[in-house]
Structures are given as C-alpha cells and as structure tokens.
Image (cartoon, rainbow, N blue to C red; front, side, top):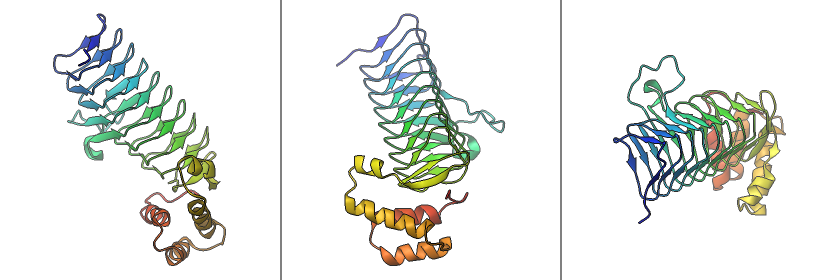
Length: 260
C-alpha cells in the first residue's frame, strides 16, 4: 500500500484524515475535519479547511484555497461543508468555498473536472462531472453547472443561474440567465448561438440525435412561437426522446428565465 508523503514544511492537523498514497507539498496547510482520498496530490502553498471531503486521485497544483468559509455577509459560522469527487485537476490559485446555512449547507464538485488557474466556485454551488472551467472563470453563489459543460476563461455566472449539460460558454461572457442544455452561448448578458455540435460529436452523440436537438432548437427560437407553445410542440413531436425531455424539463423548471 502506498505510503503518505508529507513535506516537512507542511502542517497537517491531527484531526484530518489522509488515505494511502496522499502527497502534501511544501508549506501546505491541512486543517481540522478534512478528508483526503487515496492517491490525491496536494501541491505547495495550498490551504484546505474543513469540513471538506476531497476524493481519490485528485491533483491540486498549488496555491489553491479549498473549503474556506463562504463570502457571504449572512454567514454566521454554521456547520457547512464542501464535497469534491474523484480525479479532479485543480490548478493554481483556485478558490472553492463551503456552503451556507441558508443555502443548503453544502458546496459540491463532482468528478473528472478541470478547474484552470484562478477559477472560483462560490458557496452552495453544484458542479457536475467532466466540467471544464477556463482560467478566471467564476461561479457566484448557488450556481448549478450540469455535466460536460465548458465555461470559457474570464466568464462570470450570476448567482442562482443554471448551465445545462453539454453547453459551452464563450470566453469573457457574463451569464445572468439559465443556459439550456446542448447550446453555444456567449456575450455580455450571454445569448445563444446555436447547438454545440462539435461538443456533442465529441461526447458520442449520433447524427440522428444531433439533428433532433437542432430541430428542437429551431422550434424553440426560430419559429416565433411563445415559449409555452414551443414546449408543447416539442412534447407533441418527440414525446419519447430523452434529449427533448431534458430540454423541456430544464426550461419548465427555470426560475430566472432562459437566455435566448
């Protein structure tokens, strides 16, 4: 079983739990109530505060601040936590905050994600799997990012906004409304620019599925229908399609409204 490697300059609390194969770099601080999974590597000058759970085979390059208190003036120091899954790459100066008492108490980051330098994940966010956040991409509080999303560098996502699965957000975008699944979005108050065809192909979508999603997009945004009528038309046209059902469910459950 691989041994734990802790640099002599690092500080690891006796109340932290480290699995086999964990490596802790120079001058890194691991505080109370931190649990680190097998074969995870923490680079130099990081700080991880608890309660935080960090999964297996993650790589934190260095100078990251993980599990720190939420940047929320209403936070009163309650018992909240951060949960991060397996095989994530977290690059330099990334910050990920714990949840808040009034926001559900937990921030979650899934597995197989890449958070590039200077990204920020705020309190009570939920980030799925296979998400890529470009350099300096920022999530405000309570943002929900579904699986297989790409968020371009220097982009900011407004609090309580949702980003649908397989969407791609262009660099430098300001996103203030929900972005539906499968689309390209960009701009200051981001708008839609069609289907993320390349992303769908890379994720194994068949030509038939892509055509079906493209047809649904045209019904939603190119035929001049009221949204309620467009959703009904989608339901009538493709009642058994999982992709269309995903679109209908996402749009119907939107509180902020959807970008167009």
